[in-house]
Length: 73
Image (cartoon, rainbow, N blue to C red; front, side, top):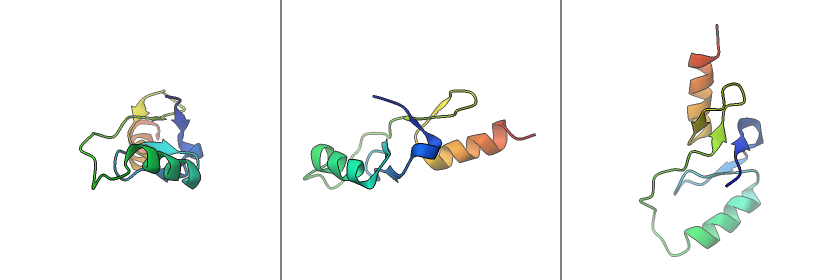
């Protein structure tokens, strides 16, 4: 699975936490991966990578928090 840089994130799946570069890609994912499901018990997948240290995160807010704590002086 390719990694998505934080500034490329446009949409996040509320069921599994995967991130996408467009709403259309999210819609395709939901139709394929979550059709007929009420919700998913699978944990979010870490797909967003910090461009400064390469650490992976499961959501854009988690990356923002990381940047605020780890990369500000």
